[in-house]
Length: 351
Image (cartoon, rainbow, N blue to C red; front, side):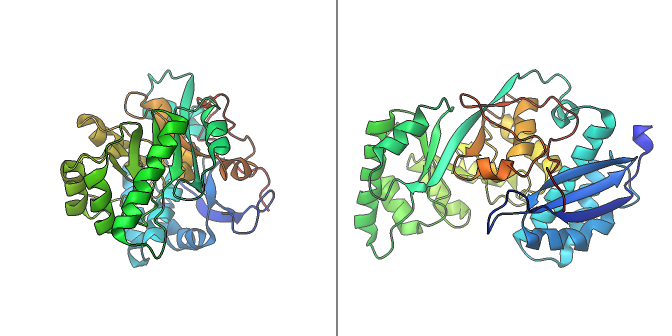
């Protein structure tokens, strides 16, 4: 009986087929009830952290997701920084995969039994193509014409430039992109801006074509984001969201245009469901980050009113998908809604 199944073993496996130098290649596996749950790929440092905290899940019920999260967080107490959060999140997602396999249901159906989305909209990101660099109208229009919900591009600060000059350059870059793309595109500064640059940009910003500016600063800096929001800048945050983040304070201070959570990095699918519920209450849409795309697909399928689309990292995701036994392939800007038991994160060839 599913409610009585406990975890027998947690381990990590290296999967190299299809990977290139620098790719994540570690998969987490959890065993129980004669089945195996998977999540990956994650980096080798995250895999080593999983090996440290994995004992906390053994012997406990597969279905006790809240309990697993609490025990894993305690076990991760001696680890440092985001590696610990990713390790907890990776085990959490592998546990959900095992739960779905044992229940013979997609995880999306476990999260919301009434989920009926036939496909999941995706937005395409291509951060290596930076709008602050040389113009590339051909690449912009090629991606924009592929049927995505919208597109997202890099907008990094150039080194060795004064604040006033750089703010002017970035504003011009956004205006140039708007002329090519029209309404409805986003940019990601990847935490490269200073507070002074963000303030100078916000003071002169006036372009309704921009859906959001994501992570201009290297941390949340709530008071600074509060000022940017008051100035009318459509800020998106969430990739660096911590598992213990004070969500009411974040929502009140930042008032983000969108919440771009990383499902694994925020502590796993169990925590991501709580974040989506909290964001829904205040009307903030959630767009799961592409590094954890597969659990993000389940989140979007389960809660379509709160999760409008997931990120598809156009330059990285196709190669990443070669690691899976059943790759997730977009068609006309949509990803298939989950139909098979579990998450759909089983590797193609463990070795």
